[in-house]
Image 1: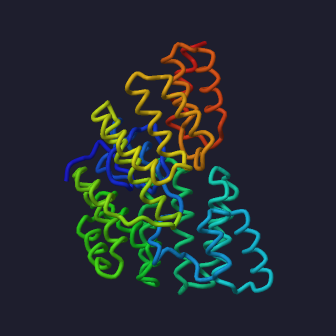
Image 2: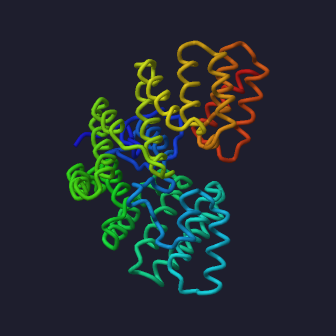
Length: 370
């Protein structure tokens, strides 16, 4: 197998090294060169948050109090509820896992909370080794911790991450999260680190009849790994509309990444725009598609339209997931408004949740304006 100079995010195709989307990713490389080092760093920025789920298999928790809070991303409330439950019953496995997830995701930039989430997950798996959600919480926390690790340390953790997903799926074969994330892992890491397209295909085949939407998502990723963009687009388009927030997040993440393929280097701006517009129709209240359209207008040399879209994206759900101020700086600079460009770059650099690659670019652009 040749040495790969590119690293694939878990949506399984190249993305800009300076655009960060919340989707899981691991390294796919056979050697480390200057070019692959940059690729690894880029892919690491796409590491994980809680995975999207089929409506039928969406629930992480069986408990009717915990699951709605998790599904809505209300991690502060989930933390309070889990702590209260554990105070009443220290042996409550689901509350223990819920506390780990809340600690992990409420503010993923807070290393102390991530460490606390890791300790809580370890306690959960040690006290409840046969409870799948404890292992899921461990895998999710590790995925987020890998974002903050050095490149080589993160690579060494791939085996541990895979083992956590494997164990989750062993204990709960119906888990959408474990099946999809394990499939992504197999598709993303090289064979020498345990990657295997055939194993990903086995995971898809195992639920083709029982969980058709899960299987379709995995097939989309398999197509993306092979750079069969039309096939991937077709699989995503065939997914049934869902009210489940996590399923929508899955579709959004994959669509954004596919659009990025066409956006990069102006490969096919019309296709990128079409994908963003389709996404916008399905979720007009989310920042992703509007941000993407702003990027398209910037690439088309239309800074005014880009600025309108990017400013609007800042007011929408999920705005923190995208490097909006960085791209606003670029758009203002293209328009010739250096004062606004400086302000936007400075805001992004000061943002503690900024993607390091984007922050580096913004810092370089700001330095040129001084």
